Length: 279
Image 1 (cartoon, rainbow, N blue to C red):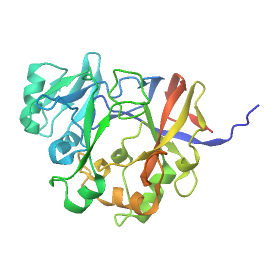
Image 2 (spheres, rainbow, N blue to C red):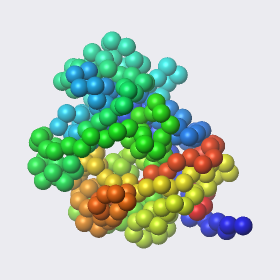
Image 3 (tube, one colour):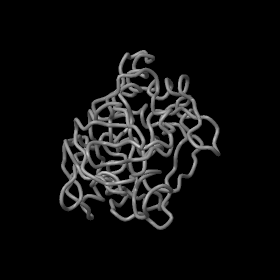
């Protein structure tokens, strides 16, 4: 019989109904092999390229991080930077978002066949700024997810308060917002350093029902550095992991700046803020 040790508690639950937009904090939700209910339910597709819009390419899409999405029965309500609320999908929403972003886009719940997005090389963005044209890698969607989802890789993303505290302590600002790293689970943990690095391959029991398995560390893109609604641009949100936690996230890639971890769902269930997390 495997002995489990208590590692912490769920201090925040977050979902993002529209990919690359600000999400919402929730008290409880169901989690299945497709992640938190309603998470990444929708995304924008660039009608000219056929690629999914992602703030990983900040020159084109960073304005998405100034839009906030909340889940509804019919999809999502989107609040734009000027305070308008767009309801669900359809031509009106598409036109308003196309005007905002300066590119023709369609809000959809169905990924294009063989969906991809562009991921600007983060260190080039750090050096040249978010408006610069830099090299980009093409990311194929959801290699560790069920088909038909908008997850970049895996359906659950987690980060610990220990990692956030470490980044904050090493940052000139002296703080860093969890929202920058777009986690689903923020796990309160009284440790030092980057404890997720030691969780690779391990199972976490969350509350009474949910079991997830950590399958990869999370290599950070440029998104944490960008302005997120009321939070200002913060290049050190990436610079600190780049200098202090450059590790191997995937066996076939060179070490990368990492913070947090990706997980798959072993057994679905309900999760709540305050749930105990055990490894």
